[in-house]
Image (cartoon, rainbow, N blue to C red; front, side):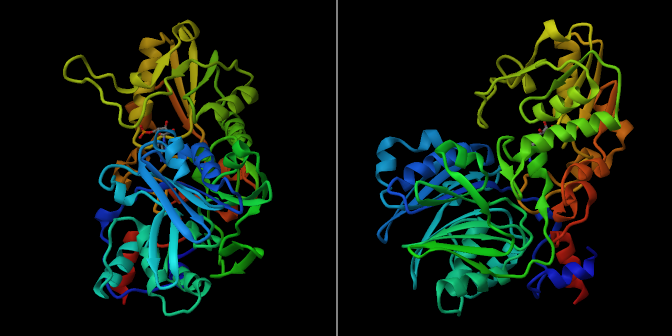
Length: 485
Ligand code: AMP
């Protein structure tokens, strides 16, 4: 899509270029889960959030409605650590929404943990949001200039204020009104006192699926959450759709027209769990294995063993091994108990780096030509350490790196945590230079054509991190756009 088309697609033009290149980075990756119509709504949400833990480990919260009485519990940390039996008992009712939050330094605070709960003229409302708004800062500024007071730095609070300040009457009209103002990626769950509402942006960047369990409706970011509680998958919330679930059942409202779909391809590469089916019920594991097969077809090489970088490289490595008929094994073992906050006793002993997380199996690797598969290279630091580990710790004769996605050249503005463009090694270095940096004998990425060949209906995907073709404005483009007016 060219710039002018994107201009037309974008729903709101603003008067000031608030965003600068310093905001060329967003931090939120999240998981959402909701239940309507089950007496154990909060307990089910707890389980659902646990299944979605990979989408966010910084903090989590659950909000429930007990015949109009709203209850909320949220904290920093992991789902299993936050919710004790006692805490879950404080969440009665048959409607609930939950949220797992991921964020990196800078915005890490309990205030930003969701759901966000507010009381306004139409009653109480809880919101759980996955994705990133492109125009959150502008909207925030506009709202603040009209007197709005913000308690957090999260995009979701902007949405809440828009709903509260909308001139439309009923809640649904206010939601449609809000959807016209916000731009970017949003898969949202809202809980009013007596209903559950699911909304997906018109591009459908982030997944959002509807399931059923024991007569209740379930909505979740990924279907692995349905599997844990034994819910059946019904369908996806469609891009641009608002699904209202209340005592009358499920009602679908088409909101903002969807000019194109832009499902996030990186969900398939790295982010979603392999046992989930996303974007029209496509299995993530099967797609990742196909990426691996395609990678092997594009980049054959003689090697003695194929090993994955666990966990995210496993399905692609299996696919690569099958296609190339090179034996597969787990040559790197991952310690699963390394939390995000693990502190290295750096000064007193030594710098452990990636060894805290991974250790090579020397018996498997010694003297071998090792082909190691990972899902992506971002800054290049992980690959460099892994190559060194396989060569020095593992005793490998040769180390060949294969990446089951194309070079990551662009940051994501729609909810995947990526560094700035200049920190992405593939945006500033050629293949040969990256190979030299990570010290591998060879390095090959999956081609963009190969990646898109694997996915049905590739035109429905956003692959901006690989092709720089952003379906909705980037912050830089918004600055340029403002200068044009
Ligand atoms: P880097 O060291 O920056 O090149 O990171 C590459 C590693 O980070 C790969 O092993 C990926 O599996 C992993 N990775 C890729 N994208 C992300 C992300 N958005 N958040 C966390 N880890 C990621």
